[in-house]
Image 1 (cartoon, rainbow, N blue to C red):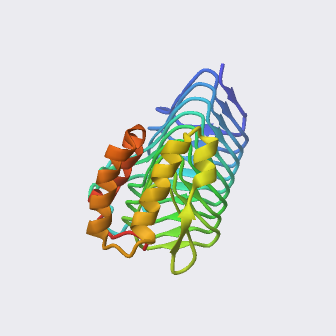
Image 2: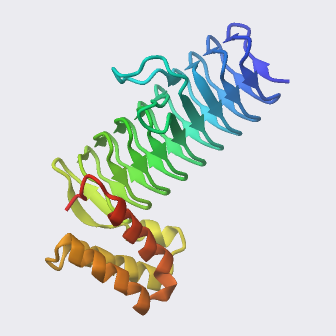
Length: 262
């Protein structure tokens, strides 16, 4: 049976798995669904049309599923979706989406989200990311798998952060961050590519070499962005084993709407 503390308030209409644990003074409102094995600490508020998957650890004082901080929001039934096996530390705030976008804010699986992180409306966060303390995402931000955001990273609305990218402490982003890139500062500047992270994830020497070459084409050879994109597309012929990584970069650059940090 679910382990619900006697002081917690679970409204009728909330759906909790049989092995969910809820701490003291937490409020879970109607419309919330929480999967098996998830633990919710004390003094949390989970509301709205929020779905939380299995085996998540939600620490005390989190506010999940609150209305978006968007003046256009008029009470539409938008959603928050959280996947499986995420760690969500103290004082995190995740809002639901808006009808001006996809109507749902998403956090994938196996993410490590530290204290005071904010996910605004319509953010789309992948899986296996790390958000250090006080990382703040404005509305409509997209973050790819395996990305790492340093503490106090501030992300402007509509910015996209590519898979395997990394930001330094106190970085402010108003433009997109390509996959694999390491970005730091205010204003943000490219500082290299995430070679150590790729090694830890089992990338071969050939794949890392291709990523290094893509970084050089974007940042070190004085090419225009269009010239760099064309050269990156041609790399697949020389390094077919990195075709997936080259395709990831190529698609990201083609879909960028705010321009990249450069």
